[in-house]
Image (spheres, rainbow, N blue to C red):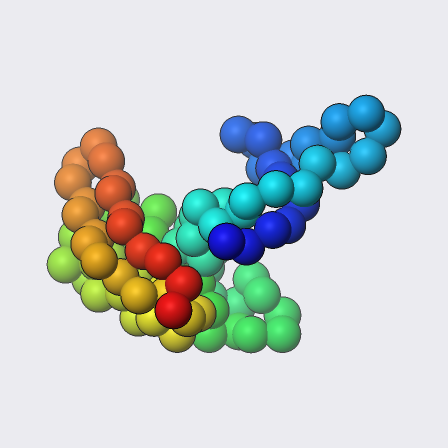
Length: 95
């Protein structure tokens, strides 16, 4: 389990009782990694699967491959990645 500051559905930090809410952020980390584009992370310019671009182009095979590469590089063991027109399902856990 990875604890971090939690975000809402709009990627804004959640503030609870006047402080940032902290909790299990594993799915949040995966989402950030897969939706970000290469170059968005200044310290790590090759990080990012750019899934939105790949899915818009209907490049599902390439999207699955890139998601697999990025998650593996970030220390995840991928059990399953399934991408369709309307749904992305990822079963991954930290090694």
